[in-house]
Image (cartoon, rainbow, N blue to C red; front, side, top):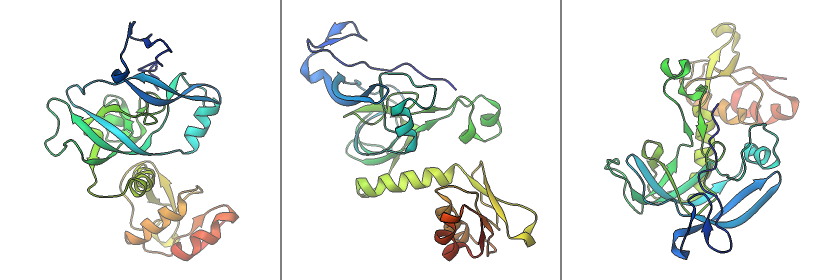
Length: 253
C-alpha cells in the first residue's frame, strides 16, 4: 500500500509556503483542518490547490463525515500515518471547475458525490476485476490529503452528479453505499442452509446473510430487497441479533 507525502503544507504566519519555496498572497490560500501529529489537529492556511489538470475536478466540500478510520488515523493507531495530513474521505461537494478533457456531464455549481478510493489498475486483483481490494489502493484523506479543507482536486472519474440531494443526506448515502459496494453476499453450505456471508466483490447471490459487523442490518435489508430466498441465518454478536431479526428472518449468534 503506497502512502503519499502530504500534498500541501501549512503556510506560516509570514505567508511563506514551505512546499513551494515562495510567499503566497491571501487569495492563494484556503482553510484546512490539518492533523499535524497524533491527536493534534489545527485549522490553518494551506496553499490553494490551483486549477484542475487534465482529468481532474476542483471541488468545494460542503459536508464531511468522520468514521472509525478517521478516528484511528487521528490517534496514530494504524501504523502508516503520514503527518501533516488533511483527513476526510466521506464527503459531498460542489464542483468549482472542471479540468481539460473533463466529462461533459460535470459542470461548475453541481453537487457531487466523490468515490474516495483510487485503484492502481495493474495489480492482480485489479486485473481480474476486483479493484475494491487493490493491493496499492489510495484513499483520499488517508494516503493523500482529503476533504477537511475548503477546496481540493480529485479525479473526474471519481466524481458523480447527485442532483438536488441535501449535503447531509448525500453524505450518509455515500457512506452506506460505499460499504455495500465493497462487499457481496455468498451462499455458505448450499441454498437449503439459508446461511450467507459477506465477501469482497459487487454482485449479490440469491440467498444471502451477513457476517458480524456494524453494517450487517443494512446488508441484510439489501439482501432481502434483492430477492434473497430467506429467511437468512445471520451469525452475529448477541447485541446485534435484535436489530437484524426483523429484516432477515432467523438469526443466530
